[in-house]
Every structure is written in C-alpha cells, then in structure tokens.
Amino acid sequence: MRHVDVLIIGGGPAGISAAIWCKRLGIDCLLLEEQSQLGGQLFNIFNEIIDYPGMRTKNGIEMQREMVKHFVEMDCLYEVNTKVLFIDERSKTVKVKKQAKKQEICYTYLILATGSSQRKLGVPGEQQMIDRGEVYSASADGERLKGKTVAIIGGGDRAFEGAHLLSSKAREVYLIHRSTRFKAREQYVERVISNPCIKVMTDTEVTAIHGDRHVTSIDLESKNKEYKNLLVDAILIRLGVAPNVELIKGKVATAQNGLIVTDDVHQSSNPFIYAIGDACTTPLFSSISSSTGQGTIVAKHISSLLTEA
Ligand SMILES: Cc1cc2nc3c(=O)[nH]c(=O)nc-3n(C[C@H](O)[C@H](O)[C@H](O)COP(=O)(O)OP(=O)(O)OC[C@H]3O[C@@H](n4cnc5c(N)ncnc54)[C@H](O)[C@@H]3O)c2cc1C
Image (cartoon, rainbow, N blue to C red; front, side, top):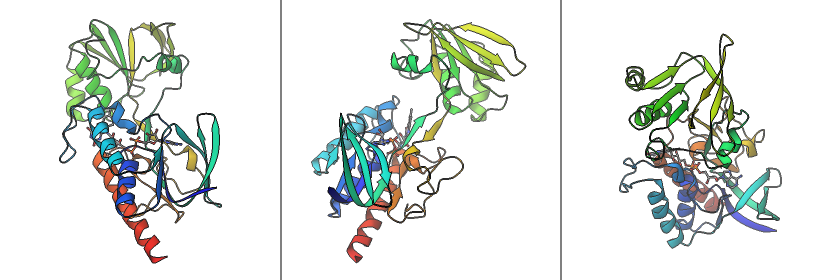
C-alpha cells in the first residue's frame, strides 16, 4: 500500500499552501483533490480580490492560476479527480476513488483542508436547478439577469449585497428571508430596505422551485401559514456556508457549528490529524490569507515532529 508522511485532503488555498510548505521543508507529501482542478472556492469568486497581500487579481480564477502555477513549479505531488471516501484513523489509512478506481493510501499525518460549501435550501427542484447550471453571481451575472424577476434567499451580507447589486439591472428583485432578524450589516440592510426596486419578504420560506428548462416560479410559505406561488426567472440562494466535515464526523472533535476543533498549531483532538482553512474557521474569520497561513503553521509543526522522530 502507498504510504506518505503527510496526506492533504483538499486543494483549495489552505491545502495548496500546506503542500508548498511541506515541499519547502523536504516533507514527503501528497495532496488529493476531488475536482478536476485545484483551487476550491477560488472558482466561485467573481469579484476583484483586493485583500491578499502582493496579489491583487480581477477575480478568483486569476488567483487560482497564480497559486497553481506556483504549486506546480515547486513540483508538489498531487492527484485531481480523486475523492477521499473514508478515513480509518486507527490504521491511518484513507480510501479514495479516482474515476472508477478505488485505492488505499497510508499516512503518518493527515491534513484536512476540505473547505466549506454553500448551504442549500433542501427543497424540491433545487438540485435540478443547480444541475442545469442556473447558479448566478450578483456581481458577474448582472447582464444575464437584466430585465428579469429575481429572488434572493437569505438574510446575511451576501444576500443584501446581491439584492442591492441586482436592483439596477433586474426588472424586479425579491429578498426573501425566513425570519424578521437579519445577520447582514446594518448599512446593507438600510440600503436595501430604502430601495423601492427591492421587495423584502420576511418570515417566509421557499418550499419548492419550479421549472423544467429554467426556473419559472417558487412556492412560498409564510410563518402564519399563507401559501403563495411567485413567478420568477432566477433564484440566488445565499444562506451562508457549512464546513465540509462529513468525512471526519465522530472521528475528531467538532464544535456545535460543525467546525473541526483545533489548537494553536491546528492539531485536532487526534494528534495525527490536523485541520486548516474553512473546515475549522468560523465564516466571520475565513479568508484566503488565513487559510494559507494555517497551511504554513501545520507544515512547520509537522516538520518539527518528523525531525524529532
Ligand atoms: C463568493 C466568494 C467570495 C469570496 N471572496 C473572498 C475574498 O475576496 N477574499 C478572501 O480572502 N476570501 C474570500 N472568500 C473566501 C475564500 O475563498 C475561502 O476562505 C477559502 O477558499 C478557503 O480555502 P480552503 O482551502 O479552506 O477551502 P476551499 O477553497 O473550500 O477548498 C477545499 C477543497 O477541498 C476539496 N475537497 C473537499 N472534500 C474533499 C474530499 N473528500 N476529497 C478530496 N477533495 C475534497 C474541495 O473540492 C475543494 O477544492 C470568498 C468566498 C466566496 C464563496
């Protein structure tokens, strides 16, 4: 069975940074990524990135290119299209699937850099909509949504920012939230509430999304049990993010919000398993720079342990 000193699961900014640092410190390391390309959430960033020191890019794809170029130039070992299906923490082995093939890889230390994903509504029609590619960005898809009726679901910054951005393009914008309290910053809320082009619907939940070739309407249910079908051309789901921790549930300590609990060197409750990036960082503090910084800490800590051994 193949053995590596350090196995990294996830090829977003956190995993890429950890692999670059492992390489620099002479550690035998392999990174596994389930998607066909490294980069993680960088592929979802359509706005300019202005907060990563020394690298100001017009969007996430440009930053992905730079990071992967660096990673490849450093000769880091990696495999894409490779999903980790199971972790056996007692034998320190992972089961992976690459296309149809399954294999096992043994590790001395495991780094979880599995990131986070957008929360879903979990209603009929949602997955079909995603599979049809009806996933929009308020900043990048303004032209595509010009003159359309759009519903934005959520009560946080991204929902409010999206509603504000689209209000100058779309014909009608509905902001729909299941409660009357919003997590969004006050100035975002005020800007939307005072905008006559945006209709805010509170205490209202989406219960179904309709449409065969594209979204045509959504079903709504209010807290006082009023039901309504709203005709819309597009829906943007902005419910925040959840850490990708299914793989490790019950094997290391996790907090109530699902995040993996780590110490100051990012070691989990299992001394051979580390977590970095969005998998262990509260969304309020998550960023590309904190993820890459955590990758550095972990690689340096593991290097000191391997040197001691
Ligand atoms: C719209 C948007 C805008 C943002 N804008 C900014 C910004 O301007 N500035 C900023 O600093 N941050 C921004 N962020 C946040 C930033 O992108 C994240 O904090 C960062 O990408 C987290 O990196 P990560 O490596 O922890 O996780 P991710 O980027 O989520 O990468 C995790 C990777 O792990 C892989 N993976 C998961 N499970 C498995 C498995 N079982 N097997 C193999 N691979 C697996 C995933 O496919 C993914 O590629 C933004 C995020 C979004 C969504």
